[in-house]
Image 1 (spheres, helix red, strand yellow):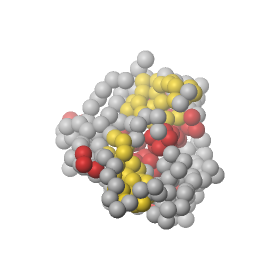
Image 2 (tube, helix red, strand yellow):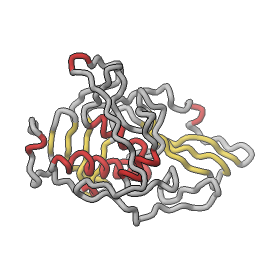
Image 3 (cartoon, one colour):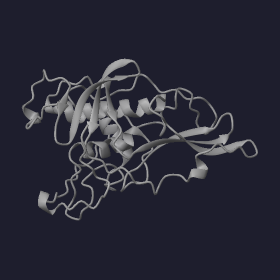
Image 4 (cartoon, helix red, strand yellow):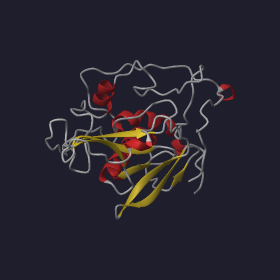
Length: 259
């Protein structure tokens, strides 16, 4: 891939592949179809301390109840759901504002290195509640939805800058406690989520045991990157960023890898 020294100079006719210091955009086959894939070159992944113990990775039925975690493989619908929602978000809020002509509806993210998606199943053996969790971050125990991870992912895509105190200069609800996930969802996704977990291979069930289906009529941000007006808009908290020479990297798993 050729290096783009000034992404903002790219015209609207630009198409994959692209290569920048912090990310690359490639074309790949996703579930049998050609799609745009975003590959991040920075990651704070690799932390295994917060992962559930190995004993919780195996199904164990006791008195008709289960409580265990399943690894979500590349071919699972749940894994695809995370990748697609995150790809849409990054295309909408990072790439297209820089005039990269990306079809956000057909854009996927390759999960950052060191991250692992698990699904927890707990409750009655045949109708358990199913919740997804993304593990691996050095600073966040887990993310429980693509929407919750989206801003953190955007921070990685934009270079993973640090504050003067050496903390992630990220405005996700975990790194910036002044941010509320409900406000973020209303501002950037068009409406607040009515359920924390929105999809589980098309057969997920909530705590009531009733099947849930993801709405296909979700209102999203326009292609130009303008968010749907929300009743309460999150404040813009700007924190100072340390100069490059002062940004000692305290996260051993941050990597600047190649695609």
